[in-house]
Image (cartoon, rainbow, N blue to C red):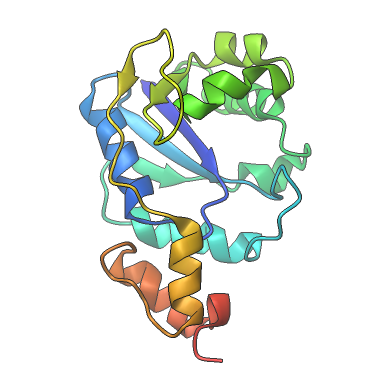
Length: 184
């Protein structure tokens, strides 16, 4: 099986994330996508708690065939190194081929990653167009609709659950758990 590894903060997970994974599967490059919320943000930002982001990802994909969510980051606690994550996933899925799903902006930042050449060897990237990122010398997948997690969090803090950007189940989870200042 060809598995798309889709890591991110997912703060909150939104329709753009879901569409991106559907685009990756529709391309024929992967058969399955695993959402992997990061345990800690690589740049030191403080997102909603890991357990909440994990739960929201699960409700986002609960009715999506060939998509799942992994808590592997909480079990590894490697400081967010993609290389360590891929090595662990390789042990969990030894007979499968891993592909890293990444925006084209990552291509331009690969020198800042820990041993990106080895990351690319273990899980050859599938690049997805990213608004504002310069073109890259690789085939890319079309970007899903532009959705901003920052805009979503701001709308929620103002008392709105933007249904066009987040799934109903994610909105319900946010409301029930008073995340992002909703209901406070």
